[in-house]
Length: 235
Image (tube, rainbow, N blue to C red; front, side, top):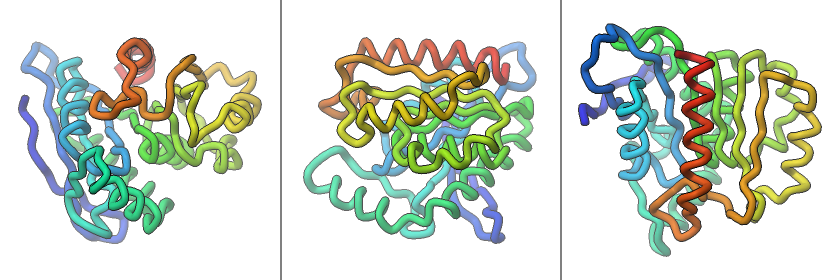
């Protein structure tokens, strides 16, 4: 894959990095963009692989380094040594500022010569919340939120969301139990531009093949729905 790190300028004039993956050469002069927002383990091999996989689907994909204000290019594994480091980084994160950093990445991607100018955010866990927040900020044209941690606590931002949103939740999520998900469903009830899917019998993180909670069937179903959603929203 044609993946590399590029510089992004933040809203306060600082530089941070992001991993960009380009689609295969085709007759298309420009491709729609995805800002791919990491889990708490950083822009690690899994996230770079996910970026590459969406690039193979014809998107220009940029995965910004969300933790750069604490530590540059965090790249952690899913194990007993790295998990506490990941949760410590999450605990120290300034979420509103991080969301603005993701918005800066979206602006960088939108202006990239390979991008059509249409950009969606796709985020996982912490990144799912960042994707939701960027929908509310209006920095993206559509948003996909995989088991977005914190979304039930940010429902006051729902009225600000004017773009299509797709949310994936896990029925057995121990971080986002179903009563919390039901609050999200109630808030967006009647919104034709917001779709909420619940995956039975799976836990938080079911999309990540590097973790024991990975569920191939649910991950494949969610990916298909995500691609269908993006094909209508930004392609």
